[in-house]
Image 1: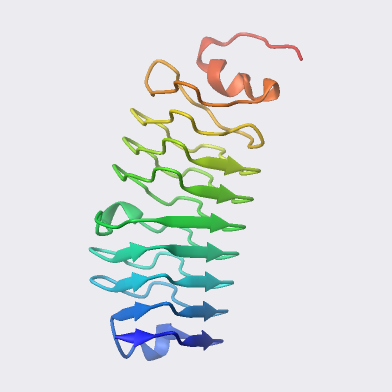
Image 2: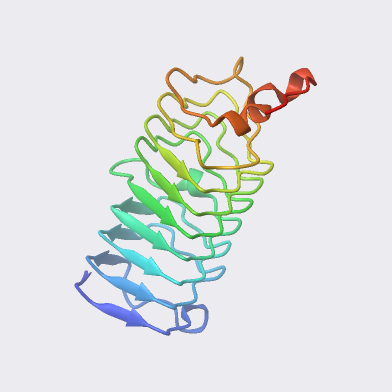
Length: 187
């Protein structure tokens, strides 16, 4: 296990990683694009300005992992180890990523592009989507209770197909809840 180490400006697409267990480490401006991180254990990790586009995370343990200004396009988070899972995202590109059937209670997504991401059957209760672009994101049979969408844009959520009790939306976001009814909302 590698502990309390900072990795900076490393292209892991060529080198690979010397270990598969990391605790309290920081990765800054590193490239993990298409890297197989399956069966890794990542505890209290920060990825800052890293490229993890289409990285493989099958059975990867992600506990208290922060992603800041990272490319996570096309990552299938639905395949990670579900035990201990806790994540946060700030300024990330999560387009085309999948969170299928995950329990992501109280997860923070801040200033992220989350276009066409899949949140099917995901438990996002008490999560926050702050200033996120959710254009084309799929929310199907998802638990969105107490989720804060007030500052996010371009979402389309069917209230009949998702749990929305006490979820928060801005007035300007009403079209994202009523779009399927083809009604006109003037604000």
